[in-house]
Amino acid sequence: MQPEARDPLTYAVSRRDRNILDMVESALRRKQVMLAFQPVILARGDNPVAFHEGLIRVLDDTGRTIPAAEFITVVEAHETGRIIDCLALECGFQALSAEPSLRLSINMSARSIGYGRWMKTLREGLEENPGAGERLILEITETSAMLMPELVISFMEEMQMKGVSFALDDFGAGYTAFRHLRDFYFDILKIDGQFIRGISANPDNQVLTKALIGIAKQFDMLSVAESVETVEDVNFLCNAGIDCLQGYYFAAPTITPPWQMPQARETA
Image 1: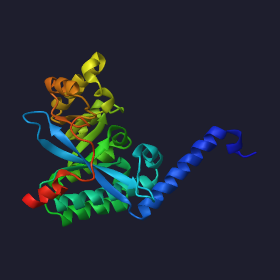
Image 2: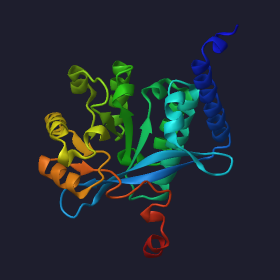
Image 3: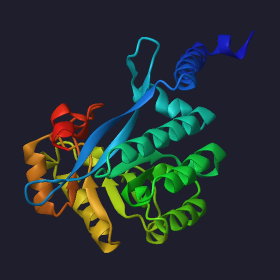
């Protein structure tokens, strides 16, 4: 009897993951991807946009978006994850080239640092787009950064010399050692949404988030609250000293950002 037959649940999960991986790989071969843009808002004044995050969207054969939640954990340790990072970075450089006023963050895995195609895309993008480095932010999740901290630190030092900024994404969800946090020199710290949703009514998350904001200030990092969804949460976070806010309260990710609207082109 095959092992799958003895464990039908494991077999079903494996088959599902294989189907998802096949679907995503098929889309990537045809470069059926695009970026959706979500603004990150400054907490002060009239809430101007600090930068946008470019979120990769993978499309199936019908043109519908394949939800990232369905495949991201499946592809993270697979070469498919590296290809997604490559295409996201390509789309990011295209957007930076098309809109000179844009400052954009793009997600990456620490695993992509050792992937030749991704590094080639990054180096060529910086060479071909003068000034793009100063408008590019690379977001690395806390969990990913801790896979190979020494490599990440060395890579960050090299790229920061070229003007590239770095954001530590989903902070609080992983296990960053404070000695590494001191050595990383991230420019931006993004607090994981699990601490932010409903924070105005959650005393425990209020204490934790204030501590994370304090850590960001101690290490001279811009603090960003992710998954901000209500005015009550906005008010609490602003009073707590957060620097920036991101979430559906301000805007959902969109494939048609403001600078691509007809009125924006007419006034340009």
